[in-house]
Image 1 (cartoon, rainbow over the protein chains, first blue to last red):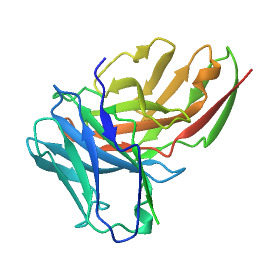
Image 2: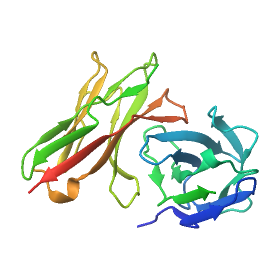
Image 3: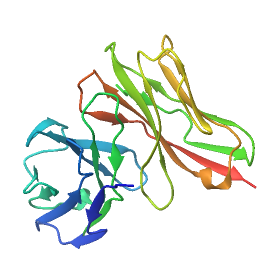
Image 4: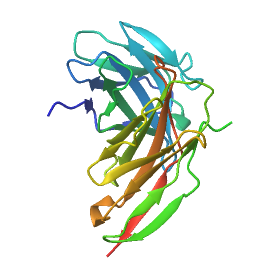
Length: 114
Length: 115
């Protein structure tokens, strides 16, 4: 069964450094998402991406964040200058076109900012 | 205001018993979708069940069913015949509007199944 993959599974970085989290969505999916989950808290929407542009973003997704689909398969989240409070699990998700389809989540990347 | 409310931070259920996890939502849209996800201790998010706002019948997927009460804006998850492997966090989520992209998640309920 096709699945969303994410790399790395765990990333440790120093405050102020840039990180890029990578995702490979399911190949026939058209909508892509990034979420974050701070340890023990709920899943928070960051951004959705469709047709090579951001379709929605939350207040969390400020100028420090950017997303890109550099080729036909990868979908990346970049954090320009990480802060301690960026430490969280970051989930990528994708879904097919059509309103009734669920999102399929990747296994997540645990980001630790020290 | 909270879009998704899950009032039970933790629940216990005996193995083989049924359990209901509560979810209420807030939206002014007429067309929306409701989803339940399971997050085991390993961390991944697993889709369980979906209910569209215009669906007249409650959704069912194996041991999972969704008790959808539109007038009360509730979408409770019912797990029948609980198994030890059902122990996990359960999140209720909503996609507002027919073409909306934003999925809003509730705070989750931690379910523990006792042997």
